[in-house]
Amino acid sequence: MKAGSRPQYCRIRRMVQMVRKGEETGDLPNSSDFMREFEVSRRTVARDLDFLRDPPSPEATAWQARNAPRWPTTTPGTGSA
Image 1: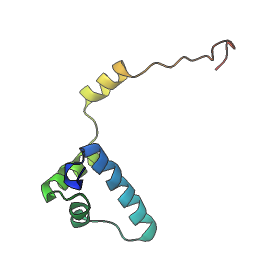
Image 2: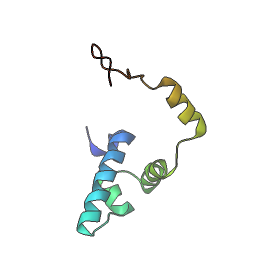
Image 3: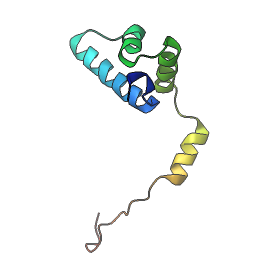
Image 4: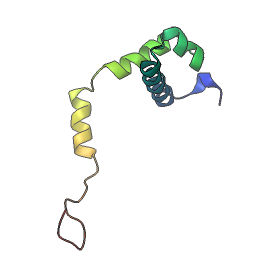
């Protein structure tokens, strides 16, 4: 798969890795670094950064709460957590 066709979640995961590494080394990446890494436009980088920056909507949070997996509060066979 060529770099420009990566799904958004792959780019975002790598962006977070690049920022964390930049914090450690003192050399934070900028939009040009992201554009070069992923072979995407500046606008695509901006959309990805907006996605990271913006909190989830109340509707999405409510949907996630309703549809999240339910884990048992006790361990089977022991009666305790």
